[in-house]
Amino acid sequence: MFVDCRITDDLRSDDRSPDRWTVFDTKTGRPAWVKGLRQAGLAFAEADALVDTLNAMERAAPGSSVTWSDRPSGPLFASV
Image (tube, rainbow, N blue to C red; front, side, top):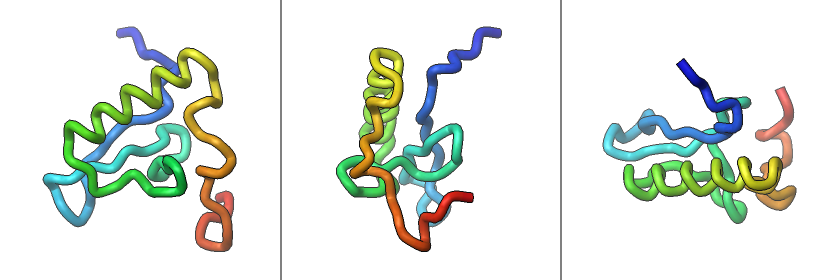
């Protein structure tokens, strides 16, 4: 089986609502952030399209799918 190591984002069902989805970083397991917003509670089609977009950005230019301004900071988001 071929595994694309450039897949940095994926989606999973939300804990609180099974018909909603979260886009998450496959390396950290944490929700993705885009323009300062956590990408959770999305409809399936929206989450799936965002995963495709973020992964395409990573394949084209590694590191391009997340900007420093999108990375959460502060005590709740400290590195593990």
